[in-house]
Amino acid sequence: MYNMTPYLETIDDVIVRGPYRDTWESLSRYQVPEWYRKAKFGIFIHWGIYSVPAFGSEWYSRNMYVKDSGEYKHHIETYGKHTEFGYKDFIPMFTADKFDPEAWAELFAQAGAKYVVPVAEHHDGFQMYKSEISHWNAFEMGPKRDVLGELKESCGKKGMQVGASSHRVEHWFFMGHGREYDSDIKEPMERGDFYWPAMPEPNHQDLFSEPVPTEEFLQDWLVRCCELVDRYQPKIVYFDWWIQHSAVRPWLRKFAAYYYNRAAEWGSDAVINYKHDAFVFGSAVPDVERGQFADVKPYFWQTDTAIALNSWGYTEHNDFRPARDIICDLADIVSKNGCLLLNVGPKPDGTISEEDRAVLLKIGQWLKVNGEAIYDSSIWRKYGEGPTQIVEGQFSDGIRKNFTSRDFRFTTAGGYLYAIALKCSDSGEYLIRSLGEQDASRVANFHGIISDIRVLGSDEKPEWNRDEEGLHIRSSFRSDCPVTFKIKVN
Image (cartoon, rainbow, N blue to C red; front, side, top):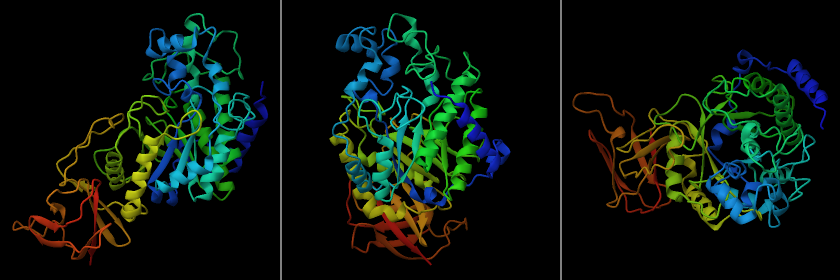
């Protein structure tokens, strides 16, 4: 069993010596790095043992032990009883024999991504990196490769920043249902075992739910997270939900202080993504899972969502979203002071599905033409206009938005104003009401002087004029994706 004491002492020492202390007051001095504000678009990667059964979702490791669930029935029919074939028995099948990190990096670069965040450890407790904390990792088992390390190197060569995602805290209860009947999840269990601690699943909404995570488990969580920081120096550390539990809060402060101090020591910078107000506002970057905000925010934020609606990991029946819908979301999110982290779920052999590839490449094609309205951009005085309403909040990405050619999103960059029509007009005529001249009632609208308008991706000079109704644009350019107008304002 790994002796945590020396690492815990190192963590305390780094916190004492560095500019940040493990208090919310100290951590609230945090500033979001400029590169992250400019990047706007990144790739999330859910890849692990759960891609082997490729059934249901990336929660297979939990659900296969939940009696009468679809995964439970599928598991018995396909692999046999849980006493004979448990989740751990998928590890030798996870060979990743076609995993090519250079090819992945090339695809992500072609997609226009500026940062990449692989899941380093999911709820199942299997680490996708070389670790001294546990032997249950991809370097010693399964692929026998340092997946995170290889991706950091290959993506770095393409100029992309690389982070890491930890979903470890949910492992407190994730395998617990296997204790409810005869399965391979058995006591006694101790730290270092793959399934440990497999506690009863709590009410996820109860911040004080019992059984409360123990100090030993939380120390193990902290040491794992700090090992990720020290070994890979990630530019982003993304945390999934349940870190908001009351017992975890002091350990979040410790981790943030350690991570920020290490970054300062290395002359680098750091980003923490969090959900559900787990961090005090201003001490890290808030994230909205599978959703977005209805209006512009004065603070920087992130949406994380997946190309597949039904799962973050690969399954044989993934329901893929069209690239056009994701591009519309990207424009909407950026116009509201956010960035988009888009997930792909590779197959167990290490290949990325043709459906995922097609979506990524189409996004990349659009960004090659329209990227100047996205990258390095800032918000305008309003995010946009149009009849289509955004449903605010998490898990709303499955709601089809059906944008019209009257829906626009605004950004600014390099002295230009960009108006992105979220749907191409069939007639070629557009009306941007926010850019109309002052009306008869002398209500202030837009007082700037427009001297030129271009359509990104076209050589044409569109016809345009302004009146009290708005800015009228007539263009022959057609696309099945959003159309961007580059407006020169004097």
